[in-house]
Image (cartoon, rainbow, N blue to C red; front, side):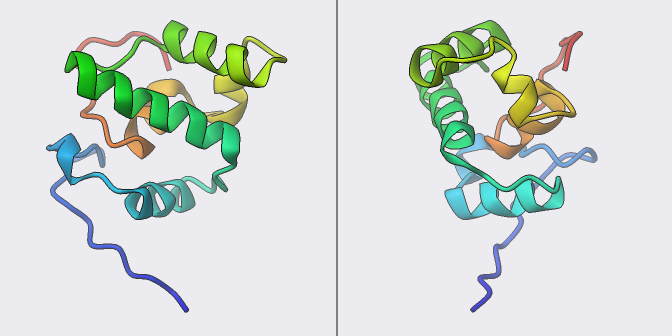
Length: 107
């Protein structure tokens, strides 16, 4: 059975205009569009990003996500880039339902 996910309002690059419109079903659809199958480490990163945003009202810097994944998954410090190979901003932020960062120079 295929679940259809309603796409909320997005900017011209596919970032949510309102992060409150995000859902896990939407994340799965956005990941599918990026040819990413979400695994537990992906969800650890996404949920951390969502919690950080909810608490601070800013998108977490990639360093914080890297540290979070390192503490929970061990292994490579670059795990976030292995999970989201086209970049933190392009894939991780978009799938996690963040607005596009205004002045981000990496990812």
